[in-house]
Image: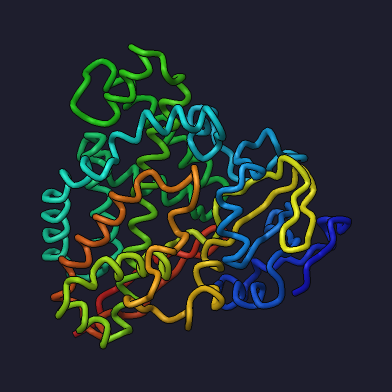
Amino acid sequence: MSTVTPSATPASLPEPFDDAFTSAPHAVLAELRAAAPVHHIALPDGSPVWLVTRDAEVRPLLADPRLSVSKRHARTPWRGFALPPELDANLLNLDGADHLRLRRLVSHGFTPRRVAGLRAAIEAAAHRYAEGLTTDVVTEFSTPLPLTVMSDLFDLPEEDRRPFARWISTMLAPPSSRAAAEAVAEVHRFLLALVAARRADPRDDLLSTLIAARDEADRLSEEELVSLAFLLLGAGIENVQHTLSAGLLALSEEPEQLAALRADPALLPGAVEEFLRHGHPNLVALRRFATEPLEVAGVTVPRGDTVLLGLASANRDPARYPDPDRFDIRRVEPAAQLALGQGVHYCLGAPLARLEIGAALTALLPRLDAGCFGRPSWTTSFRSHALNRLPLAAG
């Protein structure tokens, strides 16, 4: 597929996110990447976007201040994921001073020291879920582990944890527009009620800390408060859940690496990074908008146009990673992966995500064998590629 000039109309733009993409997203992305570093394409809803596919361009653009995450810079109204204001005023939609203000408020909850203090509880949870694994990795292990971790940080009632995770999953991969709207409404209602309850009864948790910053120091608005809770809980559960499932499947298909990892714990950090590079569910970064005409690999992106940075494509770029589709825990530059972003929007929960993946892998290593899983089931959109089922093999 060749790059289309800016004069192309949305109706004439290529639409690569079709049935072939759903069946084999990484193969389609490889074709796009080989053809050109930048493509002018249409999303499934008809919206025109610029898709950037290669590491050499994606990496610097993730940190380029000329690309804004704020929808106010869009030349035409963005028709993507719609949220009520109380869920939309989060770090993923803010630049500059507002982004830094909110990031500083939350960052103390995710410092390496604070995360290290969670290690014993996370490792205990990982071993508990590993011992209880009998049927399906997604439902019995990779979902409940990050759900427990994030729920404990926010002190969520036990009876609310599974429903919240289900609503978030539906929002990100809805079976219908009605289901998506209903899930958004449920999450909105739940978080408003949770903030009200925690305001009346403060506890030693992250949400109470954010509420104090709102009520006592007036350092964030009510919409920002609820939106931060939404972002931290939702992203903290979903991304780790799907990275774990995909990484475990990939590792089970590499018997030599599995044996090496069991024999040498020093390989664990590299394995964690390879889980992120190879199996992170986000195919693209959050949409960005050019604040001025922007030249990318010889192509001019007009001001206000939407840009999608291909994280999964860059993470499998052969110019950066030899044999990029192969899962390999011994890569020379394991931390170079872009799954967690780059620049000011680098994932706030990165230390926690790495700790969870490492603890999960350690807990499951004794039970992992080549061919230990049955047929997996995936949910795919232009945004993500995630396992919704990973059964244990019969017998």
